[in-house]
Image 1 (cartoon, rainbow, N blue to C red):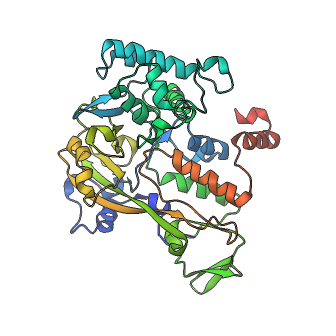
Image 2: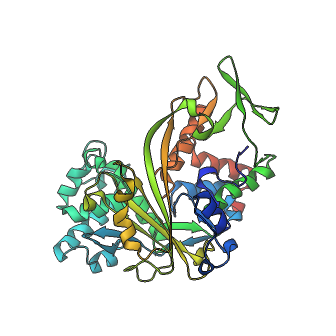
Image 3: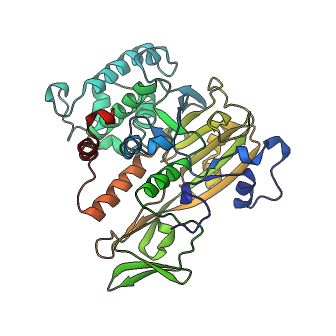
Length: 416
């Protein structure tokens, strides 16, 4: 059940463009220069999919992929000293990159080879590092990597938003860099994928699959009350009727009394008539501004897509900048990203509260998701889905087990 008239809740794609103007209370209608309103599908929350990440696996195993078409994002860039540079992700690119000097490149190459060969089940690949004890800071020291290289490795390859990871055991970081490299190896241009017609296609794909298995979707359904008896959920009341249930999954907006605010994110949707400067005229890209570069605690992200993804009118580009709010003036915080996008034809600014459940759901059987964070990929969202699964079912969600079950039902051949 969804109180909105469209799929996807807070991560919907809004179409036509007129609806986006209304949603952000902009006066008047979009100018002629914006083309046809129907040609636009604007994501409210910018995210890409890691090609080898958890969401792609979920889509493949559930076969939601048959309802979606993906395109590879053309490049990933990182901000250093006011300029943007392509993130070197292969040995050849690392050696050609102007992000590093010659000796730095050799050391970085050694580090990448070490990460590629690292296998947590084979101590011979550790080279004196204890994955569960050695901090990432010490691993960087071992390879004698400089601050700039550490910045882009931690933030543009391992995709951390802050520098807290430096003093934690290195296993997680090494695995994150491996995920990046393996995702990149699949398609070559960048490790990110994006669905044609926008992210709103993802919930619609799941809705179609759910319908095949007898699930019912109701849009435009106002939720009047979550009915609770003896501390346990028994149903949801809407328009005078009660839909009865044993378990309920919902986002924080339906249960304000069972969540707590854990922060804020600012997102600025920008419509441009040009590709972003210094990206080689890419029709899609990601830019990461590491927090160190702009004296912040958390990174600023830019996701850019365009008419090539059927989300904008011909010749138009949508760039969405986002970051975790740290001060009382979020618009000033995000300025370094907007400066890279000028001239901007139209801006839509949103500041959203981030909520986390205070009720794990064990007693009430109400399972609440976390608000979408500022990251530009779905890895943290998938962690949340797996956490909800564990709270509901009492056991971990196991990809491999799902694969085996499908093989038992359909046989190995059909899976290929």
